[in-house]
Length: 434
Image (cartoon, rainbow, N blue to C red; front, side):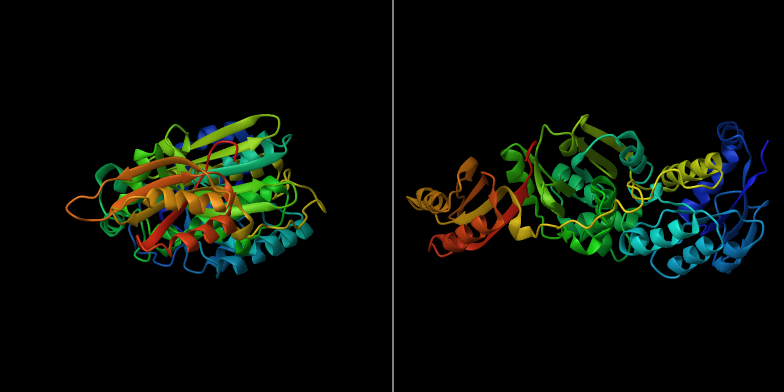
């Protein structure tokens, strides 16, 4: 049997502890599947006195993560610290030392991955990052390997469990955003500063990674249009349901022949669609290939054991391949990664959900639909809630597929109508085949 493969863990948080537990629970199974023992020899932790939910008795604990990277008894560096710094410097040092890297760090890959992969290719060592997207769901392997023979036409997904949990609670219980967010923070689903989750940054990191692999383009996080869910109210969730839709926070990447679309946004989906049925903290990604059609990947998008599962998938690949890089990081080989134009939001086309608060007067609906028609926008579905107790009426509608500029121009005209009160709410709608 080959010599053991020795791992150094950077970080012993939730995921790091999951990695240790899985190593100990499935040690014999991992040996059978790789043909060699895989052992954790060292790990770094800022607080060595903290009680942890795993057995660390056979692991050397360092307070300096660079000491783990440089250790002679570490063959593979597993980075579970997160963030950009010092994670980048640690991985650069590992690469320069010829040590393969496994990371769960979506922000680092999305924002600095291009340079990191170039450095790793020059050194001839792999950088593996299955755990950076969708927790325990093996979606990167599906894209890079299972669907390698397909042209990928697009993908969409619920890739942030916190946002999905919030929208699910709002839909099922009629609870306001702020109240559900507070519960999510108390339960540990959301951080004290929830911006990465509810403003879409976390999902944008993941979408940039998936799109780069799907379309053979450089990582382009800065090109992702990112909209969060802070503005979603239960009124729109209820009206969307009356129209046969659910509101989900989606990451959407589409190949349009001459450009790509990269969007993270709250989106209405027909309630019969797979993504519309995914609730709670679960993640789901649907990928469309020219040969296979639509394939779906569903499961836990976070959590120590689920994410550890993805980390170990990469470790086992490295153990099997003798530390070589069998599959290019972004799927396409040397020289095949090429920049692609990314459509601005103004250039995209989609259906739209509109909610208007209007006076209870004759001819209101006719005037609104007339303006829409003047801008070549038809109405596919409409729901009107009659006024109660002297209040305004509410109109909710779904438009045909139109450009962003069309709908903005039409709404500018509608807002000038004297019977339209307050702002007009607008959300994008996705249908199969859009």
